[in-house]
Length: 514
Image (cartoon, rainbow, N blue to C red; front, side):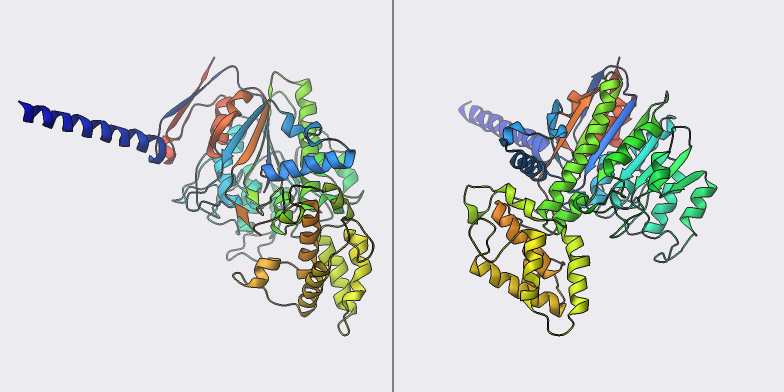
């Protein structure tokens, strides 16, 4: 009897241990779990989804700290509109095949609620097409708008209307744009409208767009005169200085259309009884962070927030029918709010010394100097330009004065810029300058360090991002969740029954509770 009791005791202990492992596995390691979300209310009629590309919490906080410094306020007294929204959540960003995501995989997750591989546009890992929330809205007879500060065929906007195995298939993506039938596209242009870079060119995208009833607008005055009954619109800024994108906000001129203007006009064009879905991307936050240019990233983050304010103005008029969601697809650059050289101090005011983005300085100042000084280039020639465009100086006292080792760093970078050295990943030069002009990157690095900012990468990072919301069902965006859940929550608030088990993702059944 004692032996039997011992065996029973061992059996019970093992059973408890195994049960614990099963519970742990179901919580921590199981790839499939069941979750039910409920929303008690009518569907949202007007839906805004703002995506700050590369915008993690460091980018948001840096922008607010800079704004506070410029106004002589404490950081706690200066918040962007997106930070004041009542719902605030934390969102994970990993892709299906890589922990650190890319814009295509992240945007497919946000747009379609499905994890996919790096570079895939609107398809799952098996290349099966997955419908986006924008397409679902269109199919429900809602109007749809897509705006971006980068090219309109870039990865993030593309995932809302295109279905392609590679984000680099710009020509095919552009044809998907035209075929989508969406009501309004605005911002940047097209990277391959005629198919010069395509293996199987289809034809001129602009010609097909006109055949499909789209009006192409590039003139600022014509754009501002657009009205709600003007039909389907593709509006591009005339000035597209790099890769068919809008200029960085700090480089724009009065002739340029801002992201906020594209947003405001979109609201006017989309508004109506049918309701609308409107995605707005601040794409060049990411580009600035790839180049480790804090000032350009901050200015574009603030410009992105100005676009959010346009949506909030609409919300104030339609609070019972509107949902606004603001998120990022991933963080970029590994921006840190603190640098060893300043210990615990931050000096955001020194960033005001930068007058041009890295791109404008490289394309204009550096390019012109290289052209005029093929022989006899001298670092001393650049000193006045460094002082003028970055506020850094060689003489005097104060935070903007360059130390001897910083001048040595700049001299070395200048020499490499003049030699047009090839920079490959895995080399010391790559760690110092990424794939950018050495002198330009060294200038931004030194200025950023003096402000108390640091960078760890010229690429994306895997840290979670912040998601904010206001309006119909906004409370669903509180908490900690994956980027695929953003799409699922929006689908729910559109009044859709969604079962994601068939998509091979986390099993989730959602239904409207009225």
